[in-house]
Image 1 (cartoon, rainbow, N blue to C red):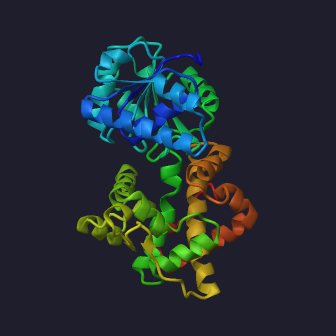
Image 2 (cartoon, one colour):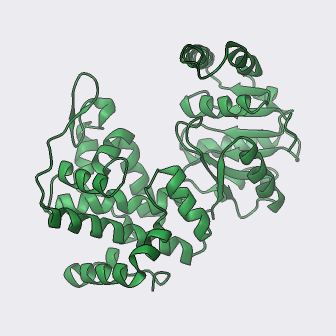
Image 3 (cartoon, one colour):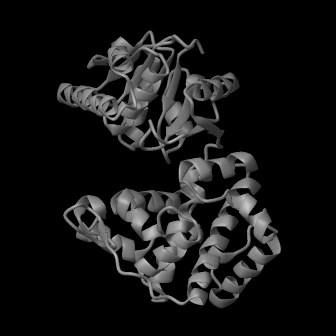
Length: 379
């Protein structure tokens, strides 16, 4: 794609605005569309405020900031995007709404325009099916905040023209991103492979084997930036629970993705985490979690680490076995998308697959549950 190509963004929320910033900083003219004029005004004001801070901190010069802001135009007419070489949709995660948008878009633009959805979990194939020319539709999943997170998942639908994938890989590298290519299956790479980090931690808690702060401390000691309870509080339990529930149903009740009643109770109570002031933890006036020190013995901590890591590696091996992505892209996705200390498949090689299999078999022998069955890929 021409480096001077115009980029269209649909949705002026935090994700849409973040992607617009990335494209504008890469030198593109960017049009941000929203059907709410007030939302566009807020997005423009937020962008100017952001770059004023970046200039103040010395991260951008005033000239650089002015150039980026001038490249972004805010519009409330979808027709304004028709000359764009790439249009990225970043709106609510609702399949029917996205399908209506792509149906309308495909009737406005040239067949050469790439139409991308930033969906994190919906079927790209189902979205593409609504377009007049489904071959021009693809998934392009950025991670929040888009300007800071390096990973982008490129997800071709069943109908996507193969040349589009190569074009987007090159374009994302030009935007200084780390692209990975994922099969159009629920959760793609990151949201699938990361599920056990939360679900197994919740399971350990549900069984009364350890408290959230103890499990968090164990996983952070292993090198994870945030423990699973701190992380889900940060993400928001409404968001995290919805993705887990969607994965569970999308995989026809696969036990590895079964949601936790502990998390559901938080959602039902409105205890959504950091943003509501209470989740698994309570938060002080600075939105910092009030978290006790862990008093677990080293052996107890190691048991938690071994259990969570084993199911994570098993999930990564299963994703590889079923061709969700290459081994290189699976490890890159977990390193760059969720900041894991190591790629899970590389970690398996380091520990030894036999050791991981023994841990999983021991869990299966204890519980006789399908969530602990060893992936054929790991065997």
